[in-house]
Image (cartoon, rainbow, N blue to C red; front, side, top):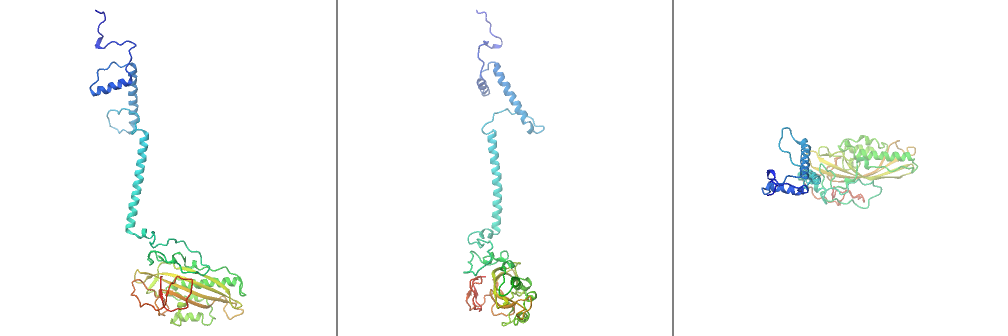
Length: 397
């Protein structure tokens, strides 16, 4: 018999040159052991023990790193360390963070869309007015000053043309006109007709004051007596200032203050807001020796509110007048006063054959009058002037 006995604890002896199991073999054994099909392993080699110790150290390090997120009192086995995987590593976390960011943006945009839809539902005109034919002017930029007679009437706008309380000039060419006195610009003065440059400048400036006082001053529009404007006119002129004062006291067909002043009966209508649209031009030339004549041609558009309701209408007034500054050394004239040579007006949307000194605009709810017998007129057409002052039908206001 051999003199070798059986090794203790049933384990075979291993020679020094016997190869230790690899890491892959040891991991495979562990998997088989968990499945219940592995044979008892051989005693791990020194290399296997090193791998085990390294894995245990990594587990402990991962546990310490997670310690800051743990809550006090929570216990349980440490979660084993794992290498970064395609769903667990930084790249996936970054992608997921960007996705959350997109979701947040989408949420904000979704809220904005809902709010916009509610606003449009409550007021559809906010959307439709900006669509083609929606009622708003495509170009609302102010027009440059008028420096020459227009060659045609301004084009009609698209969409609804009627004024509203919120948009009193909706659908009107006047939307692009100047506001009030800003639309009355005097040209640069120069000496003419034996009058100095300063005298011509005075005539231009005073004519502008007459236009503003007669057509834009709130008191005048309310029907009050325009004394400040009357003071600019020469009382020495026969049939001038005195004739206007009589017309204001006793208006009639032959003595009508509306030939110079714009006045609305306050019990019927009042100006809507404080803006009157204005467009026109002013020129001057030498008159008789020792005088200068100033020619003014302006159109004013008035948005009006019915005095006893909410209805809105527009009245368009075109006014042409010529003033004269005479040299008081050569003529019977008051120094620093203008004479009124001519004054004419054309009005769109006022009652015909009424001579009480006030304009009487029609509103949408009024009963229609009998069709006027005069010609149809576009009150915005500044390219021509008709001498026919009969009452006619206006094509727009």
